[in-house]
Amino acid sequence: MIDEKQKNPPSTNRGGITPSLKPLTSCVDWFSCTFFNVKNWEEIAAAFFLDSKDFDCSDGGINGYSKKAVNGHIQIFYEGHSATMGMFINLSGQGCRQLEENLEKLGLTWVDFFGYIVGYQINITRLDIAIDDFKGYFKIKQIEKCVKNGLVTSRFRTARNFEEIALEDGSTKGQTIYFGKGDVMIRFYDKYQERLANNKIFNDDVTFWQRTELQLRGKRAMAAIDVIIHDYNDLGDFVKGVLNKYLAFKVKGKDSHKDRWKNARWWDSFLGGVGKISLSMQAPDKSVMRSKHWIDTQVLGSFAMLYEALGNDSLLFDYAVARGQAQMSDKQKQMASDFKMDINKRIAIKDKMKQDIKELKKTNIDWIESLTSV
Image (cartoon, rainbow, N blue to C red):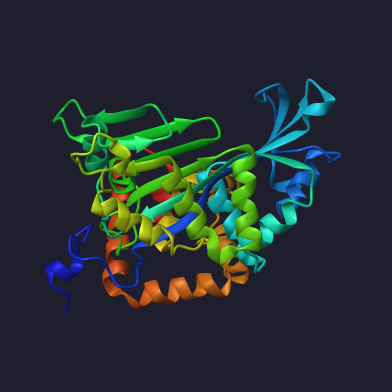
């Protein structure tokens, strides 16, 4: 029999980091580039291993492009005002996760993808490499303190500090500190607090999550991609080298030259960890719960529309399950099996779904009544 503590486990574990979670991981968190030697946008979709039939086309581009084709969080802009503009593709962080799902199904990695994509005539306009800290090498307030106390040496001349504060109680809902602009930008922010403020889902073993992002453009972005393709194991040293070149957080010393002050121990420790990272194929919040969140926000509206269109026929549920199970990858099957074996997780997600149904009923959504009776 399950007691109340088991039935209602805490939303987070404030204890030490779970051994299965690496202290530092890295992922691609933004990618955009311009293609110059393609005939149409469908060719770009194919280069990203995507089916052009899955894109929605419409007017209203950006930066001189008049049209766009969109598939989830992946955007292709085309028909520029000049023939020399080429075509532009943009993947946000969520777009990168979307591409990873497709790459994994094909048994490919970012190394494979970048190795293929550079065969085109392209200009890399942006590449973000995120370093996720789950150990707690430092906190965002330590960065802020060093900045305000003049304990930073840098090639950049200024920093920018943005903090979102709840007026109700004065609590911080998110803070980001930026260094640099142009071809190189470095930013630090509390990813855990950001997701908590937006009611996002965590893996159970995530209790601390701070992100350092390296945003590169042009030649510097291409240099990073070249390392990923040819010297994959050296990516950590490359990222460490860029951080070390542009930033250092210091302990105040007696020397009149700040450059000769000692680095803060936490910064040296962090850089040492960065030097050992390799590129991950996924962000650390990828899980069964994350999949549920994606379905909630991206799928259910269309599913309900189709359900109503078919006359509220439960056949749609049988079809969705049968079709979905046939498409599941081995990794997805393993994730489902692992989740199913954890009774606390299953109880927690079912309780949450039941609570959501109650809340939806209060909003008088008619079709939810038929959902609960199936």
